[in-house]
Length: 326
Image 1 (tube, rainbow, N blue to C red):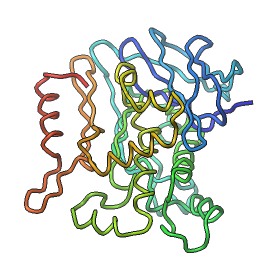
Image 2 (cartoon, helix red, strand yellow; image 1 turned 30 degrees about the vertical axis):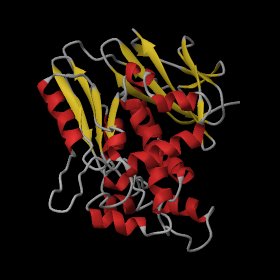
Image 3 (cartoon, rainbow, N blue to C red; image 1 turned 120 degrees about the vertical axis):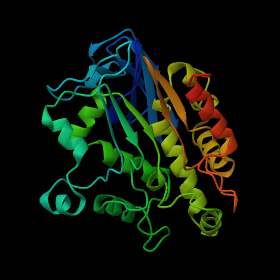
Image 4 (cartoon, rainbow, N blue to C red; image 1 turned 180 degrees about the vertical axis):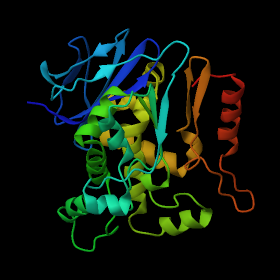
């Protein structure tokens, strides 16, 4: 029987539609409320789906091949569509480390604010913005280091860091599987963007940094895995249903091209940043939310360095002036 590995996560939401993202243990058909459904697609032995709902608000269920798997407890997940005038309450944060919530780790890492909010009983926001470093690929937790040690030879590079898609998948599962975090992400819409630690500290700081990393034996595999995992776990849910319908990579994955298509896309996105845009925009009633990629889209030319390359800057101007949608 199929089971949920990660999720459900409430991702794109507007005033009429909502999208539910999941990772499952095996291929299956994912259905929400017994009504809206889609088959999973596979990447590197993992299985994913994103289901779009139209005109629905309220408590929801998730079924895999017709068997209900969510909610797992008496704490229901709920879809709330955005008010036509836009969200009233937005919560944001970044740089969340996935460590135990005991006294020792609270002393070294601080209180997990996202978990504390989920447990607080405070009114839920209309939207949660996760603004980078959702995972730390270069500073794994002790639990992740045990996982790495169990599948690699001692001293295999990158030592004590994430190496491939399988380790990234476990990193995301660890980050989002705490029961309170999992519930919060199932019932509050989220928009996300990476920062450096999602890939590595100081990612794309300079041309010299890129040259240094390219000389290692492991960076190419790491950046391909990191950007591929980011697309699956974070970026896919940022897109509207229309944007996903036009996305050639998603079409290729649903056609069964799997790891080859994802890895080629991720390699190209790193080698030629203009081949893909991670930045995106959403119209939220009377406001426009613009999420900007200032890592992959940097211009690193010595003496002409820019946080955004020319193409990304032109896109940003269009969004600010309201000449284009997301």
